[in-house]
Length: 129
Figure (cartoon, helix red, strand yellow):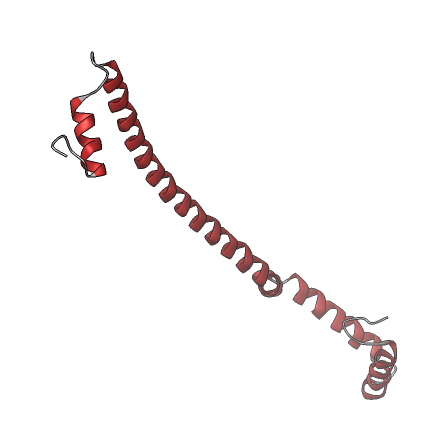
């Protein structure tokens, strides 16, 4: 089990060094003042900003991936809108052709002269043929 990346043997070694450096009488006062100092540090705005920055840096790869996916989705939407506009243009052409066909079927002799001329011009044969 480790605390702040320090194992039990390392913690025992630090306590032993502190006991030797400070002495048994002042060890309690030093530990108390160190605890109060740590408490002030943890409650300070600087510590909060530091932990927030650390959290943001940890979350940065996930955030970048989500933003990249959003850009890809936006590109797909733009492509779909372009395809839709092209298909709408083609649909208008088909509607126009259908309207011409309906007009030719509705004419008295069943053949629209203009539609027949258009068809002959597209096949390369004409009335003079």
